[in-house]
Length: 190
Length: 196
Image 1 (cartoon, each protein chain N blue to C red):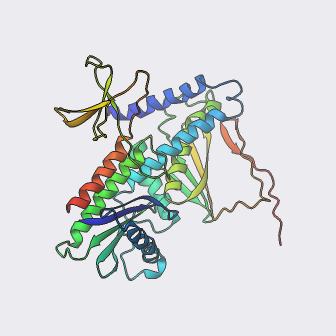
Image 2 (cartoon, rainbow over the protein chains, first blue to last red):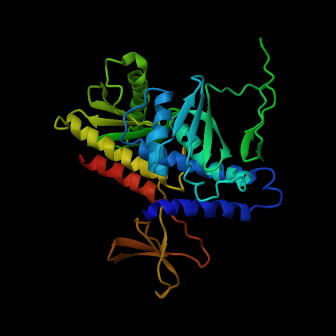
Image 3 (tube, rainbow over the protein chains, first blue to last red):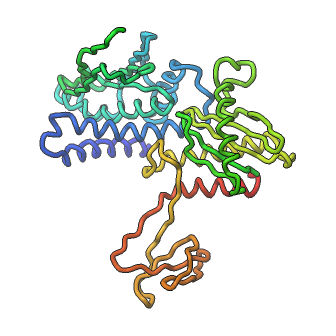
């Protein structure tokens, strides 16, 4: 089917386009990854609206994650998520053993550190979809061996910005991993 | 025949609200505002027996002496509220359902519009389209909506329907209108004119 290749090729061009038009220093501090992720976010919001138009109302968070793993992933990538794990406390890990956007790259270690660029859009896609369904989350991706990858979603429950909470997002690439480093929270207990 | 249609965001502020009798609009705004409580009650876990939890259509929220208020909540927690005239007894549940379906389809199109930022008000703007500059008097612009006829504009009909021409000075920019929002507006207008 020609339409599968369309999105794949467009996505590859998008990644290289963002990196080509990056200004000085943007590649190192992760601005390009953020741009791709934000693109995915907006697309995810629109897509989810279209896909949930005819489905029944979701009962709870797990129901929403199952929808993302089955229907959403099937419609976008023509296959389902292979494994969904959760700790029932707001952390979900979606494992895809043959991620569509990475299959065209060689399966060895050669391009492992570049893989994170190609996962940013999909992270944003998941985050945008969840945000439109009412779940604030942080989605990161990890590749240990191509083309398998894991998407980890951390749901934030009732996040309130108290003035004494400090969060810092630092995305860095190290062996093909997107890492989130947080500063220790200083929460005053009254 | 809807008298008032409102689209409420998940944070409970209106994204779009429009009513047909343009006088006494505040009464409808207030009605929609009070219906939000009923909507919340219906979708919360307390009212399990009242409405089928899996359905998006909520049905009749509450009747007043002149009007009936219907509700619909999407999976993205966006609420549609429709106020209908009570005297129109021919309106059946199925018709209301199909009207909400159409509204949901139009809202999905608005959401997929790249010029629309989620959370903004749904508005449609005027569209100005350029015409060939060969007509006398300089560049004219075709506007698909009637503009006030003044010394610098003229009314001209064209194959696409009555358009009016507005003359502009050279270099004046023209703006593209977000087409999808206009489609949403048109959809709502058609719902107010007739049952669809």
